[in-house]
Amino acid sequence: MECPVDRELDTRPLAQERAFAFWQKDIPEEYWHLTAAEMKERIARAREALGRRCVVLGHHYQREDIIQFADIRGDSFKLAQWAAQQPQAEFIVFCGVHFMAEAADILSRPHQKVVLPNMAAGCSMADMADPEDVYACWDELQEAGIGDILPITYMNSAASLKAFCGRNGGIVCTSSNARRVFEWAFQRAEKILFFPDQHLGRNTALKLGIPLDETVVWDYTLPYGSLGGNTLEQLRRAKVILWRGHCSVHMRFSVQQIEEARRRYPDVKVIVHP
Image (cartoon, rainbow, N blue to C red; front, side, top):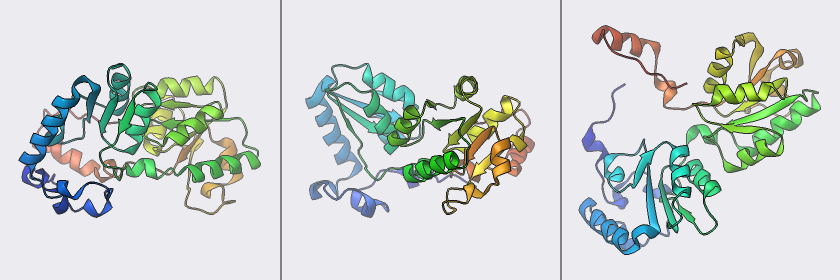
C-alpha cells in the first residue's frame, strides 16, 4: 500500500476535516474556519502568554504541522515521564490519543492538568480491550478454575485496565520491557492473561521459548460462557492467554511487501516492532 502524499496531510480549517463531525462540539465557532497560518499565529500567541506554565508533548506519529509546536517528541511513556518532571507546567497538552493522555495524567503531579486537544482521538487496538469485556474474561477464567494467572496489559490500554492489573497482582508493560515483565510474571504465577495486543504477547512468549500450542487467543466477541472460543483443556495447558486485539495499521503489512522491499533494495535493513 502507498502512503498518502504530503499534500493530503496539510492542515486545513477544522470545518473541512472529514473527522470534524466526531470532534467535541464545544470548540468555539470562531476557530472552525481558521487557516493553517491563522492557527499557527494564535498558537504562538497562546504559548507566549502561558510561557513555562504550559508544555506541549508531540507523539512520534504526529505530522510536522503538529510537531513544530512540541517541546519534546517521543513515545507515549517517554512523554508522560518527561511531563511529570516539569513541575512549573500547570498544563500538559498531549498531542496523541486517549490512552496516552491518561498515562500522562496518571504520572502527573496534583497541580497539573492534562489536555487532550481532540477527545475523539483513539487507538483501535486499545479500544479492542473494553474494560467490561476484560472483567468478564477474568471472572470466567476464575469460574473455570484457571486461578493461578496474572494479568498484564500493554501500555496502549485504558487507565481502568492498568488499575485492574494492579488490583489483581499484575503489571503494565511497554514493548521494550515486555520480555522482562513476562519473566517477572512467571516467577509469581503459572499463567499470564495478556491484553490488548496478541502479537506482542505471542512474540514475547516465543522469545521465552513458549511454543505456540501453549498459547491461546481469547475471543472477547463470543458470549459469556464460551471460554473465549477455547476448551477447558486448552486453557489448562496454556501458559499465555492472549486477547484478540491487534494494531489495525500493523495488520496491513504483509510478508510479500517485505520481500518486495528486499528485492528492490538488497541492502535494506528491516526493523520490526514486536
